[in-house]
Image 1 (cartoon, rainbow, N blue to C red):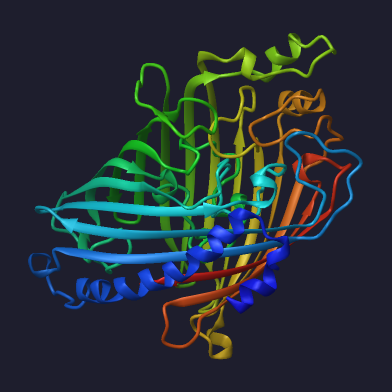
Image 2: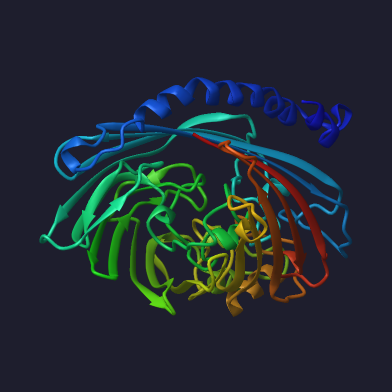
Length: 465
């Protein structure tokens, strides 16, 4: 707590920081109490499916502190990144319960608590700097069901089996390399699609939103990142084929999901090929998506604009509007300690962003270095850069003073938004704790040359049991 007082002096902390600060000792206690259960659940490794444990239990907690110094801007709007100095916190805790029901059937339930805020409430940048935060008005820690879904796997022949180790949302199980899996329930599409070996998510690797997922993939989700979905995955040797039907939020970036699929729905499909390059693992993934719902149109909003009031994309919403896009994703191991990765994505950018972030084009690349080279095999270093862009209609809408659910500086001197990020993740010996230092440097936040650049310094503590 002394360290927290240093990072966030009490005289400068708001009520929400005090809530989070008070909440942290409870996380430590919960981790302590949960550890015997987690150990028991994975205490007896099995040699065949019939003998494997019937259930498992895991736990994670992630705390992120971010500091942004003051930066220069010619002007600001309702949804701008604030120019003044900011200190913010976030915390998430998750319990992962897995139960084996019958042959090939697994049930996973994940209650989660999240609280805190991103910089400026996660407004003002498409490449927002903390993937652990959401655009939630109340920063107080909140309990909700993150995931609750059934997985059924059917072996299609007696081909080669691959053993999947016990972990969060994964019972120790052997699956045939010729198998068909079905997922039904609530989860994140990012759990199954757009995966990457080196940009794995804000809990352990890069913090930036557009490095944890393809920024141009407006993936179906409520404001906390989850959806109701039916997903099918076919594994055939080194090829994986996935398709998902998912629900959309009732309003852009909204908390509630519309289960009436005649009004709103999302279809996602992905093909993955695993391969070896000089005996080193690599993957390439091609993703496509199609969203249909009650969306507004940027061009129509501008046509209704008479130069007196800012255009409003919300006023043009109607059912039957769509958004579609594509993404390409790869990761490649180069040596035993070095890997590279990259993503690129595009969407049509005609109708408003509905779920994820306001990016219509994106490209990112980076590398990951394992600490085994300096005798720290559980440490990791990551360096990456992401560049985002907007469609012609989207940028004209923002330049006329229009607001998206994330962006809106009142006007716009357009340029691509660019963020560079680097981090070092340190794991003390024989613990389930990772401590990370992270730095991000952003050019043209919110695609605006009249604002920035911006420096963001972060500290992350992550616990797994």
